[in-house]
Image 1 (cartoon, rainbow, N blue to C red):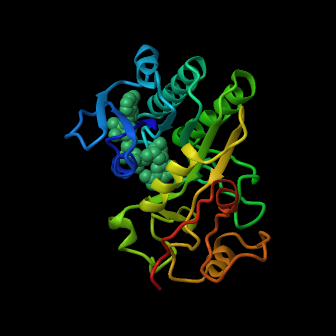
Image 2: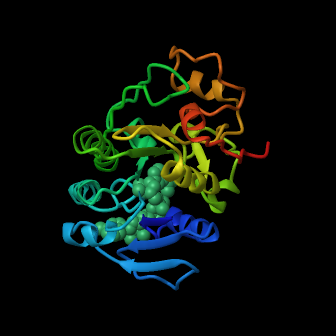
Length: 278
Ligand SMILES: NC(=O)c1ccc[n+]([C@@H]2O[C@H](COP(=O)([O-])OP(=O)(O)OC[C@H]3O[C@@H](n4cnc5c(N)ncnc54)[C@H](O)[C@@H]3O)[C@@H](O)[C@H]2O)c1
């Protein structure tokens, strides 16, 4: 299968390219940063995805586009720069994919549509664990850019016929994050709801979102978190401390995730494999 991966030189993108290469797919590995070297079946391509013309070249002939390229956090750059970079790229990917009839587009969204690491106003929730139906309220450049990307995906699926999956990842834990878990206290800065997904599970999630059957002309949002939290303490202790009074649904296990990813399990067959060793 010919798969385009954008953000291929990023943390998740590089791991995904290696995984797809191992499965024998034909991959166009796109990033603004030059390639370090090529793996079997991988064609690296340097492109600035803010440029629509370059994006048409990138997606032409793809059977799936997995769009991971982003300025991947708030306030790395002045806010408008991050917002316009991310939204512009996502628009270009969706428009070019729709016009060139790419059958499937996967977009990396973020849990930060629900929760920011540095909130401007207090965060409230209606229930836990948070699922895709929970109202969102992005507060900053990065979270808003991801949410606008999802709204663009709605438009391109409903009105342009594209089939899109948006993946709301929490912290994607590579070894340097995972090795610190379980986190010993609740005040650490990595805290965004203490949700995480191991990088290997995120990689498989991208692949399944690109290949599992989904209704045509649809946009489906998926939470993709590990089954457990990254905290050493029981999840209820954390929720009671920071979000007293918010209803907790009965399925929450003792160290269960604050995020409900059951839609991805149901529709994509995505079952996260990695949990924290407690
Ligand atoms: N890492 C996380 O914890 C996390 C959590 C939630 C969501 N996400 C999302 O998952 C995706 C992958 O995350 P990551 O950690 O691998 O990010 P990363 O920062 O490691 O990689 C992003 C890549 O995008 C490329 N890029 C940025 N602007 C570009 C442009 N204009 N043209 C071409 N390439 C461009 C960068 O060069 C970089 O290699 C991102 O969309 C991110 O927002 C990540």
